[in-house]
Image (cartoon, rainbow, N blue to C red; front, side, top):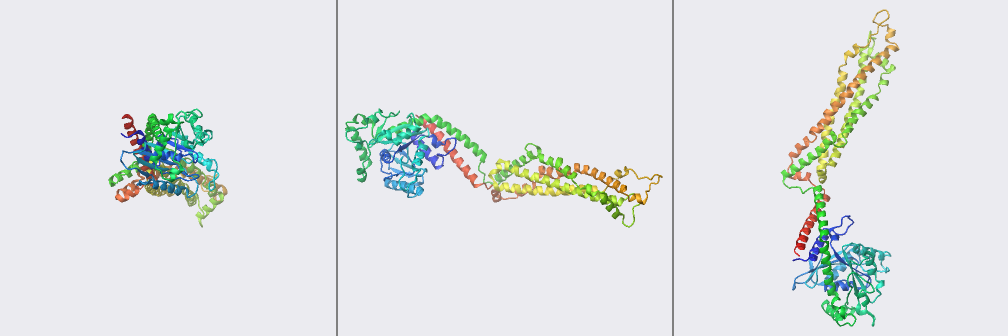
Length: 610
């Protein structure tokens, strides 16, 4: 049965492949929810030697100054006895390393690829998995060593940069802190213990490790620390004896180094009584046991996070839409469903379910009446212009009673002014409809996946609206022309007749060409034009709604439907060509969803089996 730590290692590795670790999301990622062990210490505190002792292999870069310049996420997987040890890097997933000197070189090369051959640091981690029968299941994060001063080639901010990087890992509540301090230095000056105390003041998450016990001055020991008298922690301190530089230079293997470490504690007069709880082998088992206990305690919260993440991912997938079928019939059905969704929203705008349709009423209630009132009838029917039109209509022979030809010319020329407001009303409603099409496409969530279909729908809708506009313009102008074609006779029959005092209905030539006569003509024409204006103020909106709004509701996409029905499979696929970024997002969500569901099932199976 796979251990909880082994399962967590596998889930963390899968999270890393998907990029689901770290980040600034308010909701913790699955990676952050899973406990791990971060190794913290000052430069030259023996961090690398402790890690190599736990692994039982010499695989980390060495040198003076800052050597660890990127976090190293080290996942240890215990395998069956007799199987060959090997290592794998996440950035080289198909390559197995059995020569651990090549592992060291790859760590160095991968560090240089990110930071260059300088002493700069990078927060981007290197992920390394080691499979061996000689390790315990464990995840360790090796962090750059804390330092107090910047050396040549490093920026002045390097001290704070390293501290901030280390803090970003160990301040997480699921992180177990492995604080490394050298025994030959005062524990009160330990960088690792200082930073650990700041983020874990109770010591609940901190394990203290004392290295270099064999290098202490003669006559001194570290019992006050190891036995918790000088610096108390919730967990017991563990002493470690690393390989000496001479051992490293002689390539003394880790098996021999472990044996010497056991002999040191077993034969030491100072530490003999603690020998069963000292050494790198004990530390590895202690951390593994504690890590598994922490994981088991966190299972309810981890499961809760996973379930919440599954719900969110399923919701996002529903929002993004499911993958499109490759069958032409299914694609045609999808396109028609998307068109109907758009058409439904467009009609809601027109009918009041969504804002925008009221602007059409605004054209009829405000814009058209205002335009009619601003027509220049005062200038056109001025005394001077009426006299001019009547005189020109009479020609060489003045009118005898009423200047009928002059009346007709004045009325025709006046009614011609109504063409402008009629066309302006058509155009104004056209632009409102175009805007509603644009908004409706944007509000149709299902369409957001398909920019090509959006563009085709917009083009087809605008083309249809253009046809409706032309028909509406012809109809409204025809209404104006109809008013000019046949005048309302009853209006003029009801006008008062000019009668002389002697009862002679014919006026003198002087009266017929007098100022009062022309004023009466202008007034009569003005009254007739006002009557026509009232008629058109009511009939133009009827024509516009009938030809544009009604048709847009009834047949906006009819021509598009006909054209789509003629398309073949490849052309339909082009219409459903999604935004590559959205496709990538859906693919990532689907992979995360699969990972989270698998993690939930496996955590349940492992936890229930124990």
